[in-house]
Image 1 (cartoon, helix red, strand yellow):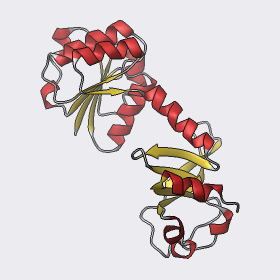
Image 2 (spheres, rainbow, N blue to C red):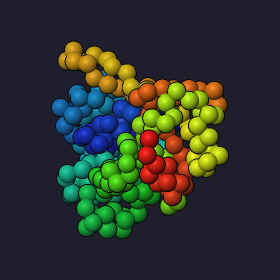
Image 3 (cartoon, rainbow, N blue to C red):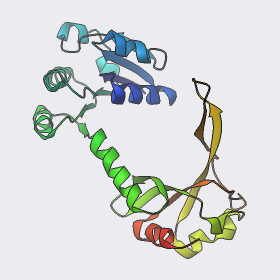
Length: 229
């Protein structure tokens, strides 16, 4: 798929790099040459461009893009101007980042297709993770179902997926295992990174320090997390 991302700060730059790593074509634009330089080797195309300039924007392949994401996170006025400008260009899917409640009201009035709340979503995920014992991260699938990352309880270490009987006893599925690997970072310091095992089978064995990726009803997840090792 093809994406245009306007604003290459922390959020926009990371989003652009992640989409590129997934194999999509990403055009990232920003008025700041410094921000463009920071991501140019991580995304398909990085362009220094003033997105408030209608003549410059018209040179972008907007109609071919599957979505345009306005990721500007600080300049209230620029975000509104750019959102309004792209709305005029018959974009298939226009997504804009919300800066605050007033800003959100304005971009809703402009008629964006979706609104992003990266800071709120991140805080919500952290709050949910902190309130459940052992949870490293969580993702809401619906109001009732969650996917969570949790360090493997000691009672399951050394057992296969089938031997845990977690599905039969708690109606929870183990989607995969995540293992922590130590690698040298760019500063030559050992840092841990996650490695996903892939699709597990009933014979997959759980090892010490493994992280389980669990899917299930929130009440069932809370029940299993409340158990002592």
